[in-house]
Length: 354
Image (tube, rainbow, N blue to C red; front, side, top):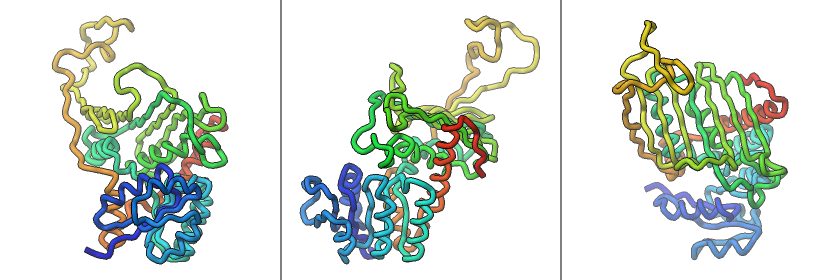
């Protein structure tokens, strides 16, 4: 095996500790040190892991090859610049930056200092997402015209530093960048138009609901909806939901551990006189109950995937076997989409993008 990756983590809160637990299970990696301004966080560090209260001190540690930046969003640019100038390879938490201009600064300094640079968008390896992507990639429901991705919650309130917009709080920067990134990576086409509704429903200062419409050049309309206080008593409502519609069928995918089906019809309604079907909506054939045997179902495709694969890809890149799955240029485009979303929501207008 090639030399192990020696990691340091800057910011040892929830995500920093999550990364530490992941690194324990990577045979090709070792956690050398963690850094946090709150020394109480160090009680969660494993024995033998060095602790620093200063990022500068951690970056001066010559045993560290790659730093993971897991500080609040507002500090990402500062830490990426410092790490690059210290000649450390960098994995930065999402959202990468507070603006697309900050992303450009990061890309410039990491290129100038010739260090590796990627972003922890691990949800490209979500099981539910990879099932949806497999359906898209294989054309399992024909020519796709619409994709809907949604996530709903009941708790409503933001927490910790996420309640402060100046620190990069709010759901658009939290879950939103993941859900948008998934859609942009799934659909390899120019994004023509962005339209969005972003709201503060029960949080005074930061967004907690959004509905985003993305119209792509290949004809796909992608809708992304999230609400932290979007209530329903239906079973498994507070989970991930996907709908993929094509001209050869539809797919429903529910849950992070996905369940669902692909649905087709045995035949289409012919344009000929037929028996009137009475429903609560009145006489209709297109929207009445389906005759027995008309609706056919198939199982969803099987996909083997885990968040560990983010680090597997990073190690394969370090050892010269693979390109990075998550390229900074992709995240620059993502941040530009986020900015278009905010403008669209502010002025209630469609934004022409690419």
